[in-house]
Length: 299
Image (cartoon, rainbow, N blue to C red; front, side, top):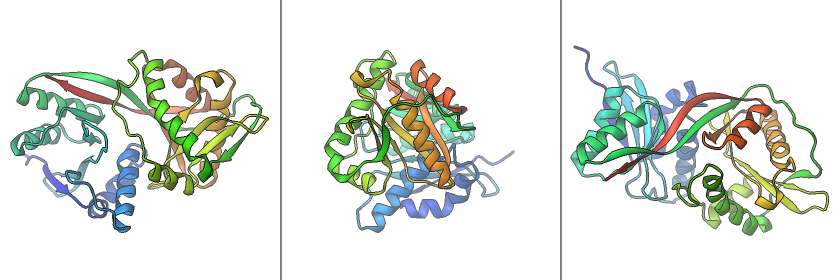
């Protein structure tokens, strides 16, 4: 009989990267969320910022000791859903049983299918309730960039004095995305970075604004720092009164070109319930890689 996979938890993000880095590097597009979040957490820890209590990173090993899956619980927003990358079914089920056994409350699981679904199903079986899909997402990678029709205006890097506008548009992004996908505004749990984190991203040159011919900002596109050669674009936000003018297509195309020029592979997530954004990114040359989901356990 083949031995079941084993679960190894790490409280130190740097320690996790030392163990799981090769695994993440082997499929860096699929691992983009875990890689970017963990690298940010490791950088903060190196600066003396304590890792929040309850955060952990998971390494799944097979009987030979090879890493065959990873995950993390590092979301700063309630209900702090764990995020799982592909892993054996036995490991996903064992993870839910581990949480149950140690009294760790989990009411939502995000990540790659089918691992997230199998894990959430076991959470529901052990604690009662049913699994519902809060959001179906799809990860895409840019293939050949297909420039859109030109739009008036220009892209510029956001400056520190843009932080209030950037904060407002980050706040509006998910609520508007929920509405566009047919959900209630604010239905999706999400991270709204605090001012200091937004300033960190702006100083890192990873937030851009598209400005109209008069120089007024009309759109925001951001990207995560490159991890294992992959840069993930997002959020992408246009205020309602500025939509339908080509700002988003122009900005994402130009940001993608800049990231490619740095040598990065470019990826992004879409909400499968938002046909507008899915069509936009397909026209720009983004191709589906893997389906993921945000799942909740309703009791």
